[in-house]
Image (cartoon, rainbow, N blue to C red; front, side):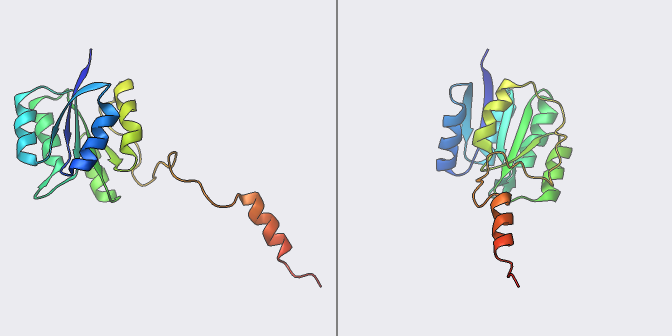
Length: 153
């Protein structure tokens, strides 16, 4: 059975990339503003709400609270560009999962594959770096360079 997802993203290009990430796994309805998303959310039943935290004059947390009040079984993911520890904790306190925008396309498919717990217990102070760029020298290379750069008497 395919899941129903409501995606709320004000930027059309970002919405298109997120739609491509989940189009094969779920039936996705996309909205670009808060008012349309609120009407969609209250009019239809969704399994997952994926919303940007910044929705111009509104906040994505308002949609999370509406989803919890109307249909408690709806899981929510809130994502944002900037890491803000206070907002991340508020998102988790509201019962949603907190993600960063750059990590979201990679992990969105995992949210469909797993049964989600009711509460996001991850510590938002520590960023998940599994998909980050790992450039630079290895620590063993740096140690060798440090030994070679010591002047010999």
